[in-house]
Amino acid sequence: MLEWFVGFAFLLALASLVYARRLARRLEALNQSYWDLRYECSRLRAQVARLNPEQAAPAPAPETAPPAGFVPLSSLKKTSREGGGPARA
Image (tube, rainbow, N blue to C red; front, top):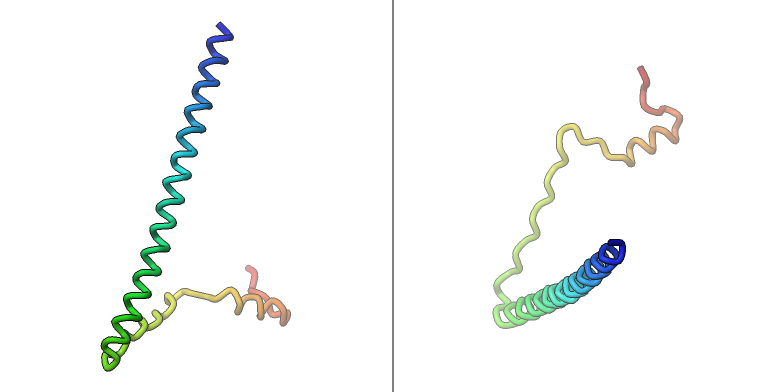
């Protein structure tokens, strides 16, 4: 009985290893495709800019204002260094 269990566990581990390696190869191929596409997009954008120089590049999106209750951590660190620290109840 124990031999069957060990054999089954070995086959399950082997199948899991094969599946993990297949997924790793697929992930690597997707990663390579992503970077190839980014390179091609940048190359084409530069080519279009060279062909049509009077058309200005799109302006970057304006930065959004932080939420109303937003407190940057850097301001908390400054107050704690000065000895003011946050008020405790």
